[in-house]
Amino acid sequence: FKKRVEDLALLDEDNMRKIQALMIYFFKNKPMPRIESIQKYVVRCSVNDIGEVFKHVSRCSYNPNISKINMQRCNFSGQQVFYCSMYSDTDLASTSMTCLVETAWEHIEDKDLVRSYFTLSRWGVKRPLHLWVLPFSEDSISKNRDFQRISERMENEIRSRFSNPEDMLEPLRYMSEVFCQRVNKKNFYKLSSAFYNSLLFFNKIKDLGIDGLIYPSSNTEGAGLNVVLSKNLIDESVIECEC
Image (tube, rainbow, N blue to C red):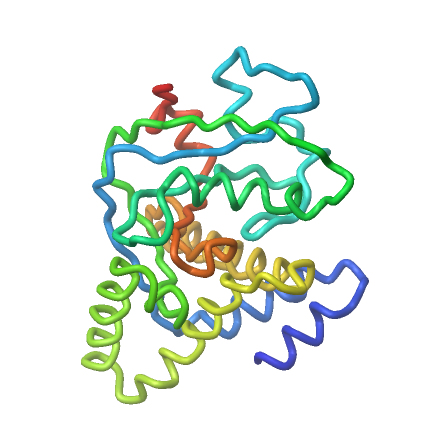
């Protein structure tokens, strides 16, 4: 499985649906850890255009212009999602720093830029969020106590429920590491976005009621906690901008 999807990701052709189909087939009988989050807010970072001052809450929300949405960690090109960061128990990355670095990294790497401006926004959460979680990256376990606790609990549960627990755990460890990759992002974005969309497929056909995914922040070397949420949470005012 690993070789097949990574070989497909190396190709320049548009084969995202093929990668997603492989993900669905491979993970259809695998467990996917989930938690209920009672965090009261999430934080989002948005890029200002040159000279732009944000004047409307909608400017901090998900991108309304589908034609300008490129493939990223969890979304296909043209797919609207809501990226944010959530408080986590770590000494190495604050909530605001996590989402700022995740959003700003490509601009930091652009040596032609003198400065860039970003807007941080805090969004209140009106109900507990039901989230998948990928806590098994070695980097995130070593740097984030939330990921450490969740991974230990989930691993114990999988070992108690399945006769071949390593067959269930190894794919989850692999995908956790995929989400942590900072090099060859173009290729690994194909894998991570196809994986997230395969979860959305399961969510729809099984009516799971999941709101999104928690995954480790690659640009904080696994210390921070990133979240991708359905845009419907914004449209339905489950999450609203506070400041």
